[in-house]
Image (cartoon, rainbow, N blue to C red; front, side):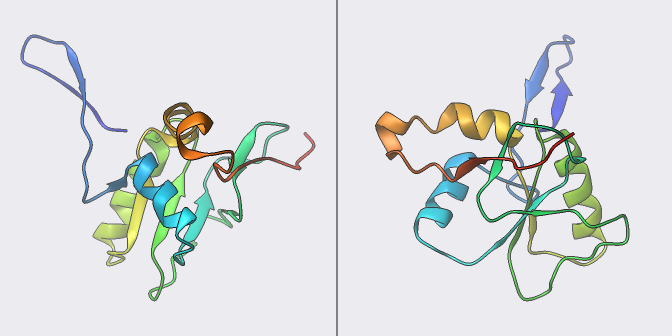
Length: 127
């Protein structure tokens, strides 16, 4: 999630639709069953949550498929935005980062509003 400083030094969080997808837009795509590749770019860790059906980033030389929309995510969106920007610059226009990462995704999707299915699942990794 890009953070910029105003001229008075105060931080401003900015959503960039060329690099990011909002948590609710991603939720809608998942809820509609639209095909996309979810990639968890965090290093393996014990516990926590991830997005249902996501894959782990397989290495530094990983390349996204050309025929599929790809959403990269981490805890707060910072590393995912950086990776998405470099992949887009390298010629992969169908890559986006999850704005705010899993933290904002979980916070913004209230089960009382969207229903019980939020597509967040516990990770099965042991540390």
